[in-house]
Image (cartoon, rainbow, N blue to C red):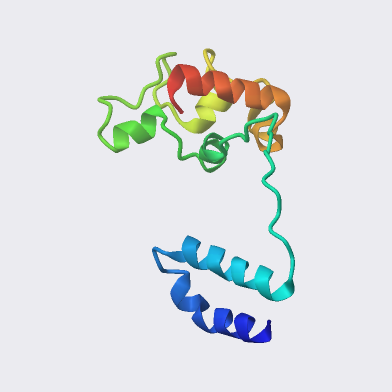
Length: 131
């Protein structure tokens, strides 16, 4: 087993960048099972009850770099940085804290805590405004 491990360690820096890394990993696992005498694990279905939440929207709000009017205007995707509520500049902070159409009651702190209400608000915001 030590020979297999030392060979794997020697080749690891090259394998990690290889397009065939999955084949190498599976062959290494097969070799280790043969050497150690262990049997192959049974196929098990992995049932997940909840889909993991995409962290991009939360991170975009936390960093202030979401698809808001001011950034879309800066990137020349919009003709104006104004919010449709009448605010001169639509920033992520405006969307979360002071926009009469979209604001979140708990503000930025609630988003940072990722409460159930914050996640529901984010989902609604994503559906309606493609954050």
